[in-house]
Image (tube, rainbow, N blue to C red):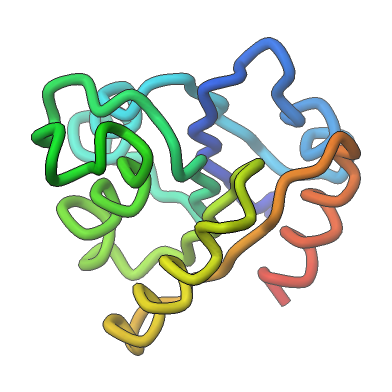
Length: 135
């Protein structure tokens, strides 16, 4: 059975969904956190992995202060909606400065499988990270 991935990424037109599909994963690629909520809690789709961009529009889900003006909205999304789902979460971003935030989140949630993937121009890098993370 194919593993199913929820990919939430603001750069939908540059999305690595194609590479993950070629690798044999089922992928739901979304641009908005609210759509992720719909898939997870309304449609009740079960995922083997959630890959989420750290910097997304907070779309009224969080306060400006809470999400650091959207800079940490992916982390806020985990804290509010994902931490109790027991689904591995891989945070993915262009800004490698946020790795420390993910490491802190990992320490605060030892029961959760949390990872960080520094985004590069090579989408194959994400595929390698996903393959290793799901082992």
